[in-house]
Length: 201
Image 1 (cartoon, rainbow, N blue to C red):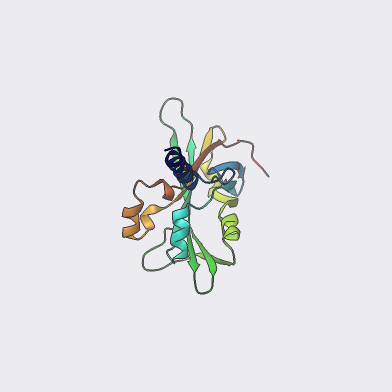
Image 2: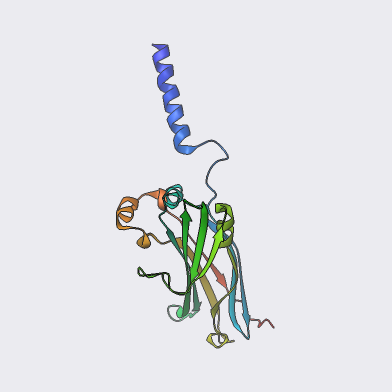
């Protein structure tokens, strides 16, 4: 009787371990720990450091040759005490991450416009030997121009909403259906920051 109870307890412990993993192996929380805004005579620039790990299901799909799509979006808004905040401009950057099983290399394509089904369009592409290297590139945003100088009124108050997410709508239809409501596919983060009105020169 005691042996039977002990076996059941051990099975339960094993199931919990398989679901939650060992201590210290938890996935890094997704977020944007660093974000900087700069207003110059050349425009409004955004720099940031993103923090995330690829969802396990997304990584498995990549190893099977299925590309993943990501979007980085920056929205510039002006504060208005008497009404809703005024939308000034939205700028986006689109990324396509793929893995070639034959060459065992990763490729990252970056475009200012959404990728079309008929092709990659005008994009910047890089090849990588290891996944950590390509993720490090995706997680770094350096002086990204998100608005023109003329978009800013020196008398106003402005905020920038930065968002990054895995674009599920770009997945093959069967994967979209299978991923619905599954947390193993979730990857999104956001941060809001006020724009300093001192003009950097």
